[in-house]
Image (cartoon, rainbow, N blue to C red; front, side, top):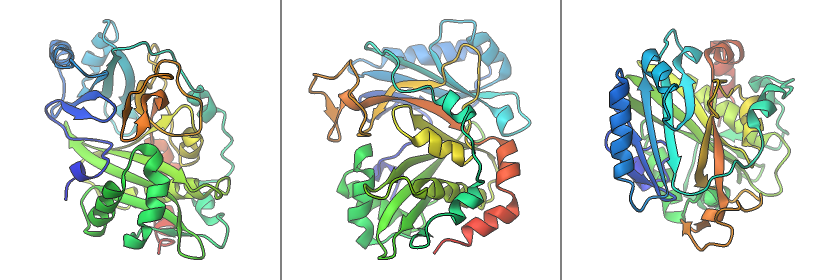
Length: 335
């Protein structure tokens, strides 16, 4: 069972593919070493976007291409420098354009992350969850209701939840899960990660950070994400690995990610925001653009389309926070 049967976050490299919330999305399979290629490919994507709300192009670009692209009018939304994770001067570039007004929304999560006082390491975060809760990286059919309650806000339906549980249980490659159970065995917090390979790198996105109502403010979701990262790092990868996240600027996901070691790279002139990318029922007010319109996808109105900040787990934080010994200690806590 492939990712097409679940609510995939990363998609597949190659040709443009329709994505949720009226997006046309393309991830380039090969490295980009010429600016003209980036320009012409994005132009073709735009020309194919009739009927779509948004177009996004993602690719690994050489340093020269990035430097040149920043001097053009290309709509560069985000850049992840490969120097954050390896001895490499290339960068993952996100080009994005919306075919509607898109005023900024949410908070400045880059400032939030920079000024957040992380007094506890990820290992300490995991160890400090209340004793009546425990980490799990196992799922079964009995978890369907709770996982649906956790992920419905992201547009998952029950069939996709069932497919995810089946895919994960069958050992599907490049799929990770981290959860917290209460003392009755019920799933009360969860996160997941999904990987794709393109341009010679392994791109891993951590996502779907969520806590059941009534269980907030206990550090549970933060513990699942720290554990998720440890699980990913516990898997040896032959390719250069980039562990990423996209933080909803209208929610607390950036604070959770910061506690796990994620940062938002600072690039002059680049917002690092995927504008009105997907919709999430997050409890925040509706956006002003679609507030009174009927557009919806997967049961979620476009009025909940949000800005998302692109984040990465840098090598320095992996080396400082997730040493092999720490990874072993965290992964040993899973049942």
